[in-house]
Length: 503
Length: 42
Image 1 (cartoon, chains in turn blue, brown):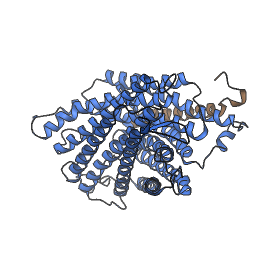
Image 2 (image 1 turned 90 degrees about the horizontal axis):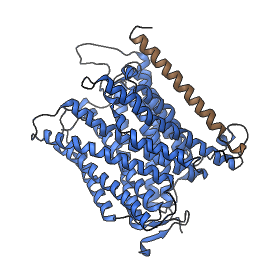
Image 3 (image 1 turned 120 degrees about the vertical axis):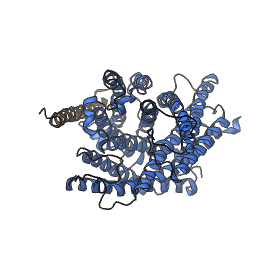
Image 4 (image 1 turned 60 degrees about the vertical axis):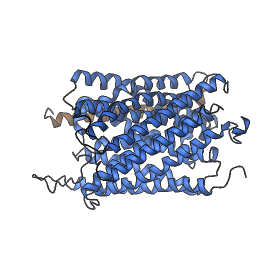
């Protein structure tokens, strides 16, 4: 058994080698999909910018569909699976309960992701991420997503089994670390979320195959968002677990109050999945009273949890830096913080972007009356690119800079580029997000190939302010793509050719 | 938190949190104002 472990020279943790192999393969696969999704994003932005209008309509919707699948499913869920194995087996000094199950989950996820990708590229599944009925994709598309979801459920079950093994074999003392606790919240949310996915993707696939005569669009939309938005809530819980990990790894921070932070994770697990109806605020099939209960009460309990973390994470960073002697005035700790450490700068970009851009706008758009101001406009992608890309993706990038030496046992290559990478990506994505929300406030629709409405029976011009806004969005996207490419190159080069840490 | 020395207390974070709340209140107020103009109640 001992031969299956190695001792990490930096942290002193016992790393289970089968768990390490699974973390590696999931992390590498996630970065491959990040690269694909990022390239697609650039083609989409340059199509939305009318001055360039790069893609024809069929390719635009095809690439938009694949961009959503590559980014929201593949990049993020593969990385989350790696986080689950890291926070269970590695942080608890434990063996992974059943490595074969981890490989089974990985194979199912990968077969599923490839099936869905092939279905999209074949040109008969241009249904976009939501695949709203009666838009119909190839049955392969739905089957691929179901297989992917089953693989991810196996990873979640394996996570909980590993927690049980660690407790039974007494590999740690006291409570599990806060990071593991946060990952457990993410895994609990994930199981409910993925079950929603199975409930509606299976019959929808059968409908697409002609076995079932019809699907109810309203029921589909309700169930879809029980899956679609909740998927993002897994991201939120995992992202915040990463924030606490990054705060500890970069400045040696400890949570100011463990109970406070753990309570916030419990609020997520209880309420965040229920609050998905804010996507349906203008759907006629659900009563106003139900929508308001769901989005104005339940949603705010989940928002409360985010606000608790938004206080707790910067507070623990500040306390840690003040203890190092940066006590002058209110913000000496912030000025003297390790801004050259890419994991620290990604942490700050992630926390600030998630809170100020994604969080505040999310509360507005989740309010029934205010939702009409931005419903189906570019304000909405502006909001969720702040939460998912600036928030989650940047937190995962920050953690990668520690995963490379700790798990891959390689020194990060191109350290100067690594220092600059979060600034390119962060500034680029902040620009994209703000510019999208700005043009969305002029009524520019989301998911629209041609906002000049050139072939429509009526004409409408959004004017030069919107043209400028779209150009700024494209500029931000170029910066973000440079930052994203830098991240992928640094990660891949380090994995393939980085100097061994122990040498 | 109460066990922290005075100079280690996260006072800067508290200022940032109040700033965050102020931004949220302003944006919330503006959103309702825009809505009132859209529905011609302004």
